[in-house]
Image (cartoon, rainbow, N blue to C red):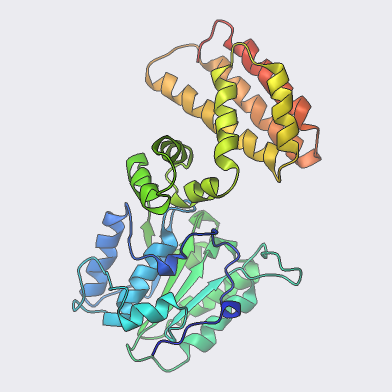
Length: 350
């Protein structure tokens, strides 16, 4: 009988509403090459004691780690299980992992502070849990697996504590570090890990996955999400869960009307953004991304005289950063951005 973890036992402030946690996801999209690499090592009986799984946020690093963990806890370092490291959802080990109740699995991540908000760093207190966990007697499967999500959130003390754990690795144990920016980790930590780089998903792969996750959304909206998400399923789902898609559409519309912007409409948009949490900042992100994408496509097609567009892109970046940092009036920022784009568009189509 699998003991289900009580809700208060699992702190998941970063879980997207209405979406499964990575430990509950059994499909892995777009990561065949790194999966094949680690599967060969595990099934040959030579798994790494420390694995660094890197890549941009939201592309499946945690899903990848839980897939490896389920296999190791079910079959160990052997070829007894499937070549793709899959474990059936109704397998007792998989059910324990899904419930957050497997004694051989430890997941470390940023917790909540006293005010209930997500901490900005992964603390040394969390990393020190490794010593007690790895010091325990192995479970029924004989392996202990720890996942640090994400390792580049560690502060200096936590990084030093992790380095000590890596210097004295226990037998029949695997430590998986997830990192959005592995360059932020200490070189001595990176050198003690086998690294797997996960890649952003292709737009077609994203659309297929979004059709599964968001069946009630229209094809055009899913296509826009896939294009805006930069290969990140997590980013696409986050966009779909709030006003992100509408804000992105507003940014595209501003670019589409670049030569003759509707200033009254821009003012109305600024008013609406000012009433949203981080509305102006998020609009700026989409506007800059859309502009950068169009400049890139024009450059690939061989278009000349794009220097002015690159200059205005950099100016807009500075403008939105300054607005966010100094809490400036979004109306002036959007009006200035519209005028700058219109002036650049004269005689220089984008």
